[in-house]
Structure formats: structure tokens, C-alpha cells
Length: 266
Image (cartoon, rainbow, N blue to C red):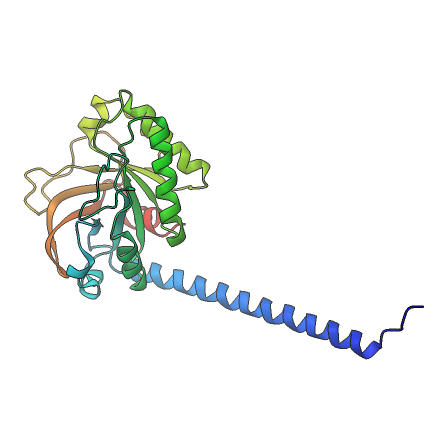
């Protein structure tokens, strides 16, 4: 014969369950509001600094040599190297033997703490399709916890007979993992010489230095539709006493809209 359950026990149990659900919902809404508030704060701060440069950094720019407070006041955005390429055969000062950059975690964390929007990049250097896909997966696994605004493929070196196939394999792997914002960094000459197809990328970033004086010299001579121009590898920005790669939004684009596209949409 079943025992009757005391109604008071039932009411108490359901009351506790309802209280827990309400508490969890409140915490979720609070976290959601904080996230939205933080995104709004980052956007407001970033758009106030549109005239300041975009930098790209890697393990060669050692965190211990950077004053992140000062540097962050003098840039609008940062693109951080996460993967140094499948060609890595031994550990060096900037990268581990598995290809991951030694400083990417520090760089991303320090910039994000100061509300600097961050994109990420990987040097593309697989010798075959399998290496390209493996590097793309490693890149994604390391970068995705930081929710970067853009994933960039840095294409500078021919490491496969058909480099375009390798680049597409890398891009497609990222896409299959759920990445929506995928761009390519490539020189116009290299792109043309190796028939690199940029049409499946949502953004193009090109280097064009002129005399590489450290200053902006001229708009790149190309018909390529690009969003970012890296104009020197010898830039100087307060907060770091060595040379930096300096980038600007293409002169042919709306600066605010393009910056939002590259740094403020996740």
C-alpha cells in the first residue's frame, strides 16, 4: 500500500524548484545585459578612435616589452597571430613546435581587458590538404574561446604545388567549424602569380609598403577590392619601443562601416 505524500512536502519541493528557476533566469538575464553593455562600450570606445591605427602582432612582439595601457590608448584594433604555420619544425622564440604562437593568449587577453576589439590570424603553410585542414582546426580550437571578430589567413609563401587548393582547404575547414567571418591577407603580386582566388573570403587585407618608411606613403595600385591596407612594417606606436606592422582601412571604403564589419560583428 502506498503511503500518502504530505501536501506540505510537495508544496515546499515545487516552491524550491520555482525559486531556482527564477534565480537562474535572473542570473542569465543579468549576464546577458552585462554582455550587451560591454559590447556597446567596446563599440563606443572603438569608434571614437577610428583615426588611430590597426596593428597586427605575434610572439615576436613580446608581452613583457609592451605597455598595454599606453598601446591600447593609441590603436583602434588589433589582429593577433594564433598559429605560425604547419611548416614549424622546431620551437622558436615566437612559436611552439605545434605551430601555436607563444604570446597569442597574453596579447588577446590584455587587449580585450582594455576593450580593444581583436581579430586573429594564422600563417598558412601546409604542404598538403591534410596539413592545411589540421592547421585550420588547431587555429580554430585555440582562437575560438576568445570570440575574435575575424579569422584571417596569412598567405605569403608557396608550400604546395597548387597553393590555391591549399588556401581553399584551410578556409573551407574553418567554415565547416562554424566560422562566419573569414578574410585573407595576401600580396597582389603573390595572389596573381599563384592564382589565389579571394572570392570566397568576406574580406581582403593587402600589404603595400612603398619604401617602408614607417609612414603612410600612397594608396596601393590595384583594382582588387580590399578592406585593410598594411602600409609599413616599421611603424612606431607609443607603448612599444620596437617596430610594428601598421594598417588602415582602405581609403575607398567607408571607415566606420568597414571597421564595424571587421571588428565589431561577431
